[in-house]
Length: 636
Image (cartoon, one colour):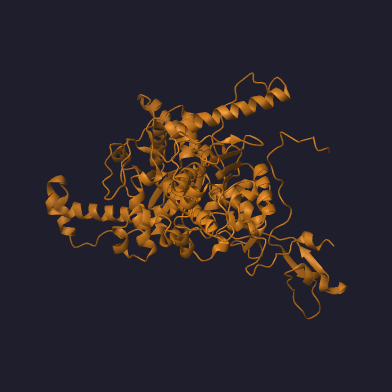
């Protein structure tokens, strides 16, 4: 093609690979010798022709003996197998998602000792748009349906999202300081801005002596589709750029099976004592009989394995994220047991409503919309505080930084559809590094090659040089461009601007971000659209315009919907208590040092990072860093 020809309107799709990233390669069996494993191409080429390697197609379908027929073998495919394969072993995705479905939720919720459902802001917003209600009304409607299906608590995830944003900011500042203090690095700002940016650099470098892992640009890691792609396909040199932090879903899961578990056990014990205490005899006519059982032991405390935690998310890749073996509270107990999409939650709500309508029609009762009262114990946070208390400005927690004026919280004033990492970190970095206070209005990102790759820059007020450059790249087409630029710059580059993507990249696998995730509820197609007329060009333009309008409406609902308040992460009423709790847990229960600690001393601290950290490992190399041999390497 000529240099003036460009390809546009390409499908954002990557064909599945036909090879596993961990192939089983064995040499031909000789007499008296077993199978020899090959670890590199050089070993394979060094073999005599008679011992030419035989490539066996890896089989991820694990077998076990049948209970009814000893000779029969039953094939099994688990969801975690997706972490070790770059292609699907079956054309039916439902086989892999059996443990992550609405049917599985109904079955386990009915039998679990405690069922907790966490609903993300993006999924809640999609549900509100489908119901044509406010986000708060949609949450109450979903909570009532989930309660009838067996859920004890329904939580929002704003506290976990706030913690993720604060830790993401701390990680970026650590890396920026490390690069600013490195020899030969010249900041892009004026002398005054440079001196301000260098403040605290020596302390940051002393906190982490392994500066080789503090590479820029920092790539966000809260999208499981992107992180899985990076581990399986991208070169290992890119992984140190990923933020080593748990995604918000897993932070929420970790808090549910620790913090909420302890609060629930305290509540059970208190109610057991209250029902048997003579101080409250007038409240219960059964007390006289219960006095005889005063010597009976109290309720056994629940363990993390007794909690069935369900997360409602905007995409299907979250299901694979929850199945990651490293995301466990204790051995064998996952932080998130089941992930449902917004579409699956809508199906559950509609099922419950249909059953209610059927019962009302039989009994002649008036039809009423499902609605869980705001002051109900079902709508709670990880400390089991009620959302109604948050909306009234009283959380009941000591040491809260501030109180919210609404039950629901959004942590950024705009660009929140994919977590708001670029928005929050850019604002905080401008203030802390260069003492530049940005307006309260949302950041204005400039569209680059297409509408799914955008950029925002911070300019020096004096010299107009670029101080910070942040990029938002959505969709695999743009992800590949980002990776290409970062790889081309190489690890030896000291200036983040050499990569062409700046200092931070918010990466999402879904075009349009999380609000446009594959698990979101699709908008009903209008009749008589350009697509039905057969006008291909007009249909494509109409779809793009419709997507922009839909995402803008969802963004407005997420940030400014009824019952929602914009509260900075550091001012979230639960953030300081959560940080103190995490610090005490990470330090092995040494709560004395964490009880009176300030938020500034806890954000980004080593105990918190160890408890909320994550490790991304390339599946293209083994534990020793040697390249894993693929079958394509043997096609010489």
